[in-house]
Length: 135
Image (tube, rainbow, N blue to C red; front, top):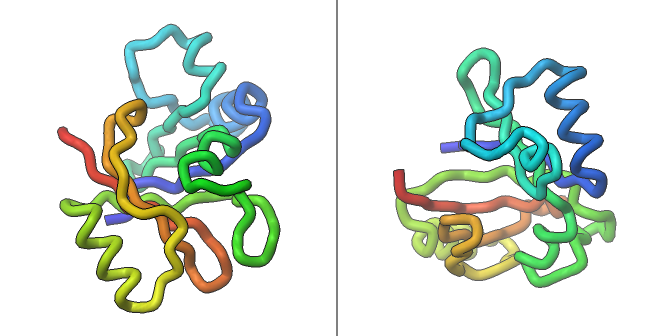
């Protein structure tokens, strides 16, 4: 299930304020101080209609997570990640690779994120994440 569209940004506070103040999206409650949420490196917003979340994430941290410089197949920096919540990250990753997806990063636990993740790339270089977490 597509759980999130993640926008990768270089200037997190400015981007956070844009999505919150200009587009009017409501930040997801995390229990942290709003000033800390605005500082990043991650923030999620609720879709007004209750659909897929929109999130912001620091581009450099995502590049580090996939072991690269953030450049996709065509050489441009990653701008977005389609995040799919799956019951078994390893199985979803293996199935995608078996069907011809290009590996970006094999399954790994990301304790700081509270989840297990793996990344592949679509033919034009779009970063795809398979993720699983408790709850």
